[in-house]
Image (cartoon, rainbow, N blue to C red):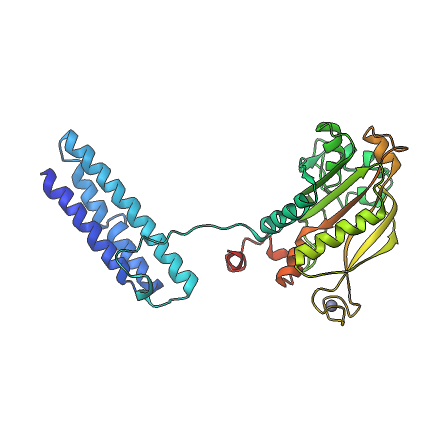
Length: 343
Ligand SMILES: [Zn+2]
């Protein structure tokens, strides 16, 4: 009895694959699935018969049935992916019997791709990558970064607090402290820390409660604003694959002194003026500055000998500019029609 059943299984395998190859469009896939792989389908019926075999035959037939089930399921998934990706391209395009089934391979999220791109750029400049926790001690997120209790960023409205008194980190700057205090780095050093951050605010096309930042800091005996300008110009020029210029405007952040806002020449209009740059020719990119002596002290670094710069900027914004994306919420939306464009 074994022989006929394994033969039936083999026959089913051939017939089902042939029928799948001939499927002309998305609509013909579901009837195929029901017919061969459905709960009352042909394969299920043969599997039911396996239970009547004697033990050794049952084992080998069972294994064969499992293999066939896996093969057909994979082939079905691959076929569905072809129709989805090519919007009903002619079925003959991939119908060659000798072609292996195209598997539905995943791909990286556009933010992950951007982070890898950034890491590559900074690695070539000698930076190392550090990571820190997403749920952070307020001391690291605020106090040790020279952000006093009365600072508006500490208000309930801007920060997600946990019941136990921790916060969801509002920036990647705490990693500065963690890198030095936990990884025992001693100057000189150059570190970047890309990662996810959180703000308790309402969302719109350019604001999201969950987004990504790049923190970078370099400390040495003679690190100056000129080093900073060189690093940032290289960063943006390599990321956008075009030569950009930057400008600094004085600004205030508690953890740097002096502090500045960094603008980049508009990569869309080359400074001719467009809607993206608000006709100014400049794009606001990030906040930065020379690390505040108090922050160096909090890292147990002698601020009379060592100095350095730090900056923190959005990664989502970089990806949006690079790929001409006009709504930051798309990144976390889980929408495959958006995400599949980056495969
Ligand atoms: Zn522009």
